[in-house]
Image (cartoon, helix red, strand yellow):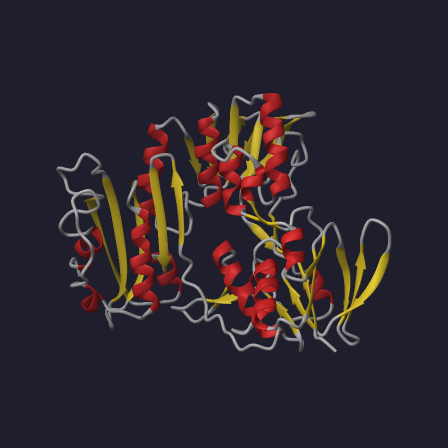
Length: 442
């Protein structure tokens, strides 16, 4: 009798798990349940779909249910798993018509996360949105096309908020960003965030930091935002203040939860209950520098964790060791990226660190495409090990973070990196690449 693998959830982790499980064990029976009406799509492309840079939603569809069926993976859309019965290895499932039970030999929970929607006055007014799913983006596009809002408030200055600022600006809207933390891009250091703040303000985007939203104003449609400092006009509001892991189903059967109430998993994506795995935005992971459990929900991590969960559920032997929190975003002409630890994270871990920041250019100074970029490195003062890197600059800046992420992943010291043989040609870099300039400051 073939082994039955059941997956709860689609998009990144769930579909990656299904595909890897099929490659690992061609004979197993794989069934996936999702309460969404879309199974596999590029969630990171949603801001550009809303802004019109991506013309059609079909361009965001990675794979359809029919394509999974060709690999003998059964996909059940708009079907919710209501209960897990680990003692009998069964699930209670509900679709449009009925509720029924299904059995499993191995279960993968990939229920993802949902946008944080604070319990504030006016949060359910028309014109107030979150952006997490393809359906969210379609509702937002419809509102923008019908109402033609002139002023948009973005609550949250992280990656999604910044990417949406770019796309709203392309629609000709007046924009303000409201961030409760002392600066935008809270996972970067203030001196680096300030560079982007000044750029955005020069483009007419108002930045309100250290300011907390207390409610939304309006009767039927939103008309403004009330903060602890006053009121701001807005006929459209995007809430981009983070996500909450969908771990309630797991918690209901006693699965151990970890930081931020995400499902605890080990490096094999095993949960605290035998034969049950978890992966993606509902699960924890390990930080490769601190060795501590963290919750950093990113699409790249979800795909990797899903792959490991699928392999192991199908009888393989795979592991996912952890993350560095590497992230990147574009905001109009500017790019930002980061990896490893920030200064604040180093302080919280009580590390003895030193940091240096340099200003350089994306290309040789005489090259027409040469633009400013700033690069910051953080190192352990005792061992010299590279701990973190941050970049803010114009086109050609941010992907340099991958060099730093690779170095940190391998535990390299500053001394080992100072003579790296990095590529040079005038359109791409000064003769001393900014990474090397920064390394040689230590």
